[in-house]
Length: 298
Image (cartoon, rainbow, N blue to C red; front, side, top):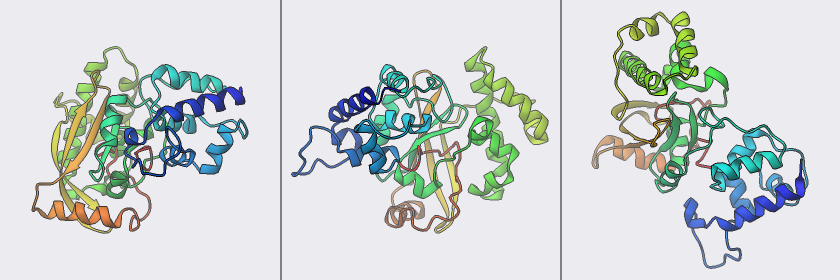
């Protein structure tokens, strides 16, 4: 691992990012051209001391998860992200999907600007990649699982607890919607082997999934009315919007409610209480409402 080169690269990228690029106030007392070290640490979900040690060319080898979080916080391009991984002597991250996938800059830029609107970026297999603080307050922290368990669709059909985010009356509708969306993903990916493996496993583990898959219904999720069960505010009725990347492999999800509705009032209250009343750290909307890299749009 080339610690001096890694330190120099991190500092050079930090100096390049402007506070406004990541939704931070500029302020009259700012003395650095880009972000402060503690701001990068906050955006990446790392401790300030840990990041400072990295910029000083000290400390232990950063994990792949920490590097992916730093790449997002510093708005690195794909080439820059790969360079960061090489400097840290880590295998390059997957280029397509998974919790360590590189969030597409256009979606990340939009997420940064949504502010108090709950929002998150997910993959086409409903794996949450990054979300803002409002999404954390609404949906809980990002899941930490790897492999199939990273997909909310997979958890929906294999883990009964995953369904607690929605009222029981809505479960059949969501099951149909998840499967129809997965059918579209399978066709769009073509010869990709990840979806067939997931489908084969789900067919073995869930009779409900197998029956729905055999209907061959196809429908990409775009705008849906959702009722989300929140531990402090009860059931919140919201509209979930989807904005897709050009290749369809990532989507930005955000939640809204018409002005004057109970849902709008609950979102307003949610922005006040934040995450202080969240209990258990469960991932409420899994891949769908998705909106976490954890914790906050970092």
